[in-house]
Image (cartoon, rainbow, N blue to C red; front, side, top):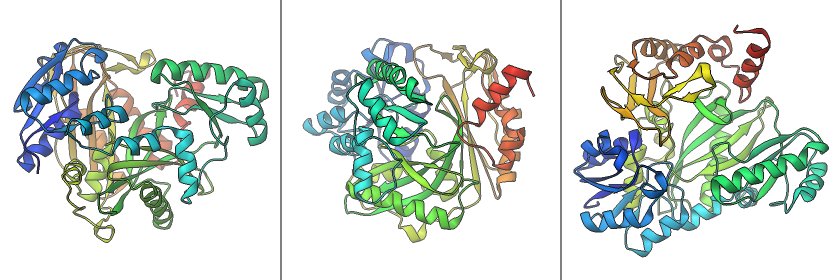
Length: 454
């Protein structure tokens, strides 16, 4: 096992990784910006190094600063968490070149899956269903229009690089393709430094279903069931749950086998997620692969009892998986609500500031992952998520009831949060019935804009 792990991240994921390290008996190093000098992950770690100013580009994304922190502290291992450098293939390569163990897949694996057009080809080659689309990237707006004519409308115009809903536009007819191409390409170039675009057939009212995978360096790959991430706003996930209300055991087996086939096709080793779109007929299509631990990984941990971060660390240390497929079972139901410092009434505008009072809920089946404490100042420079609230129950109804109770107990004063939004969702008829899709929230928002709140 490792002598010391440097956690190249901040917030709740840095604390989550450090907790796993403590249980494994591994000392940890925190890195932090000047804005995060009082952050909880700095206090949790055995050592801490300031790596730059508040701006991410000058601190958490500064590879040289992180390498220097490793040299100063003697850390020979880096865990990137999610976001920042977690899916940066160049950083993984640099770590390897400096004899540092990167806890995650190799840079080559990231490159294979990081380009979505290339990933589609790879998945199709190993028999994973893909959405009908262009054969690869399209060179210009005219080529996009020709490809869309062949695919059939409506189409999704998508960036090959990046994620998080950036660089994505819907073209409903031939006249709108060129403009969608230009906007998506410009947005992707600004966000990821890569404006390449490809096209896919738009699947109407789909569910967003992702399968959690673990692969080791001995060719073993397992799936740990699915998470339903369909409650979204502008392609940003807000609520996740496992198992999905739309997936029965037979469909789970088929989708899980496809996900494993995809991961084995590239020799994947580490924690990762293959994401599918599921249509109303039960047909599913590969969307993308995330080559990192996900924000919503605790949902899977609650229903399987498998510590995904520990498994990540063990895999990176050269150990085989501690579980095989036959030992993985789904127990009960889990739901995660992302608690953000945002104002739902103001189009979810970020609301940084000082937390004057904090009470975190507890009781049966409740888990809270957070980096916030009473008196903590939420800086305006980073993601607005301040906590992940999870509820686990024997049934979906019990999980919803526990989540509702926990949301009512959760007190965050001094800043506006999304807690009221999540309380509304727990009472929403479509959510409670499990009859939602990725467009449900936007359709509801459109109805409210026309008729007022319902």
